[in-house]
Image (cartoon, rainbow, N blue to C red; front, side):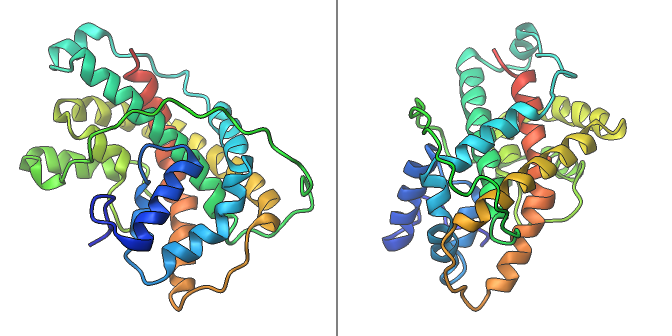
Length: 265
């Protein structure tokens, strides 16, 4: 089991999930937090350590700057006629856009927030205050699909896509790809596009830009988190967080922004 789903969550875990949704202004809890809930005391440790910088608006501010800094102009939107041929309806496109928007919103916050747990604090911006963004209009989105629902060929292609630009495994499949796998006919288009930008170096450039911008800002915020005693598995979790923030999210954030542009209405 790599996660405690929002439907399965009870007690303190369910309360923290609700706190995460409200504080991060998200309609769902990202996979990494659901994964933390599978380890004794980890979700509590990470969330209560980091909540102050999410609650202050600082993470959201730097996350917005991070998203804006990533150039995804090299891809073009897929024509509506092509999506119609693939059986992607107007309602599907609306869901896809909202889903990708939320994934990008969450990933850009988490790469910065989680990195503060191992970043060396910087004196820059210590006393800075941040204006909070207005709450977004979030819709209820269907749950991520179980990958066992895919045919063998679809699952094989999903795995091939998941290997593109991957440097290290984070222990669970990316929620961004799981969400889009609800429409398996999109998978060949996603594979083709990501393969091209990976082979010509564009994906690597975007990954490095994501890392550089995130770590610059995480060091500013590192002095503002709660330094709570870690659980017994704290060192293992920090290693997982490093893999995620240095490999997993820097890959999925630009991929999500690229796909959002390709699949936008």
